[in-house]
Length: 150
Image (cartoon, rainbow, N blue to C red; front, side, top):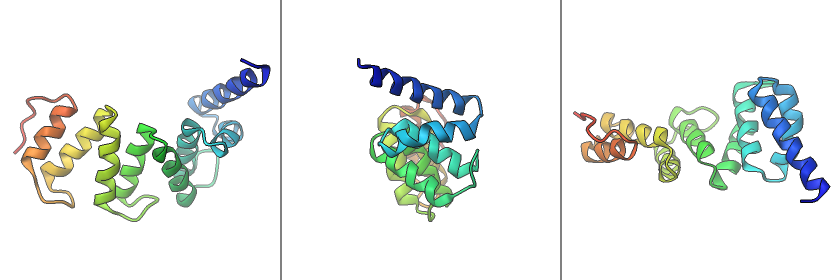
C-alpha cells in the first residue's frame, strides 16, 4: 500500500465517520471526491444527504443521480433506496415496475428489507396484481418462513 492509498483510505473513513456523526457538511466535503471517482458507498451517502437536505440544500435530482450510480454498481442499500424512490415517487417518478426491479436486485444480495418490501407489495397488490404465492416466497426469502399471508 502506497502512502497515497493510505491517505485516501483515511479520507474515505473520515468522510464516513463524519456522516455517522451527523456532521453532514464535513461528510459532503470529504465524500464528494470519492463519489465523483465512482466509490459506491460515498455515492450512496451523497444521495442520502441530497435526498434529505442534510448539510446541503435538498436536491431530488442529485439524490436520484447519486443513488442510481451506486445502485448500478451493485450497492445493495442504494438498490433498496432507489426502489423506494420509485415506489414512493420521491426523487423519481412513481414506477412500481422499476421499484420491483431494484428491490429484487437488493433482495438477491440478501437484503431482507427489500425481500420484505416485495412481499408486502405482492400481498397488498400495491401497483401490481395481488399474488399470495409471490408474497409468501418473498417473506420466506426475508426469513419469515411461516408468515401468514391472506
